[in-house]
Image 1 (cartoon, helix red, strand yellow):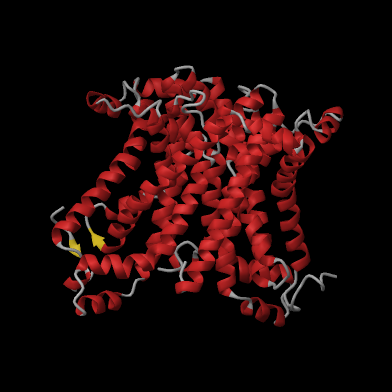
Image 2: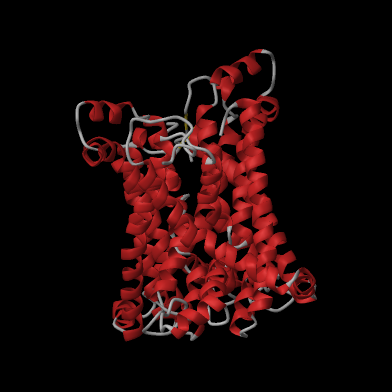
Length: 287
Length: 279
């Protein structure tokens, strides 16, 4: 760590050289142990039997069904979440109404509820031993242990992602530009698509990116709601659990490596957005 | 038509539809399920609920979830501050890589983190073997749960403290130094108080997330009832036994803990806004 350079050329506002070296060493060690080691392990274990092992694992019917399931869930949950986020941010940022603070608190609520409790709630609401669930069963509508339940569970855990990113950005941008467009005769939709959307597109992409990562990776809520039926309701994370518990280590870690690559891609795009469009994102507004 | 709801008239269109969509989705996705859990609790009745929560196994699971989350979040409070400080103030090789990697626990699915940590710290894993001669066992003990929760909670502290460190005015530090304060004194008496609200917020967010964490914990925990069995796992077990009332009882207990922590986080933020206008 000899190439440490002072961030400010004023010696009284930094720590002694030795303290700095120690702190940097500590941070690097911490990152290596807690962040890089687990990540490297995923890929090392996936390739424990070489590329053939990993490819064979990916061609297992259960693994392929899980990949299809996860992609379908994200394809439905993420756009729904984006629609919700835009609608909520439009109402909250552009209008002044009663109960706004309470609404924001409710939107944030899913972040502080355990995913397992979220799954439990859906089982209690739609499961066979509730009156509503019994009615659904009588009409042959399956929600729990089926696709709709997994989508609902995914929506619950990802609920705040897009809205939370858009609300601060749209509040900061105010509504003068939209008002100007309307004065000049543009319709409401035209104003939205030609004025608002271009202003929020990077923030929207940022929110969608994080939402997608969570949607594809959600485990606890989906595990409870899906019933983990192989080839039917098992998603990639729940299939990873089943492979791992059956000591099919290579299969488990190969699926895990696919999700880890998705996570790395998410981080890469996220860093790129933060670097290029920092002023248009809520998360990096302060830079 | 929405006149009583809107505080001030707006020339912009679309309040009705956007508010309607937001409220409808909020109701179906969040409020209705929460209502179902609380409604089940009312149907069971408080005495019965208490009876189902007040057993040794449930208490030890709830206590374990809370204790492990507290220990991991305290650990993150210290190391998250160090990491945030180093990332903002020092320039060294690999800084940007570590900065980007701090978000890894947000992006990496919890089940993936769980099996990776288990493979590392299991008795036959590389870290597990390295620690064995010192008599240290991490996997399948409570320490394994701490480890998983440290991983999960790390970004919360770093990402709430980092922007506040970036905004620190160097003039204050210079003033402190000019007045004769040693560097350590400046850090403790000038900088730390400014960072306290952000640190507390990050700590509370990490704690709230860790208490309910499931995916990253269950692989490494060993899941021995009364010893390393976390509360969310007990809910899953009760559901698998088709005992949804007992699952609901534990779920309500956890939901109340979540609400309490949400209130605490809001209180910290109001307090810090009044105090220094940050966060």
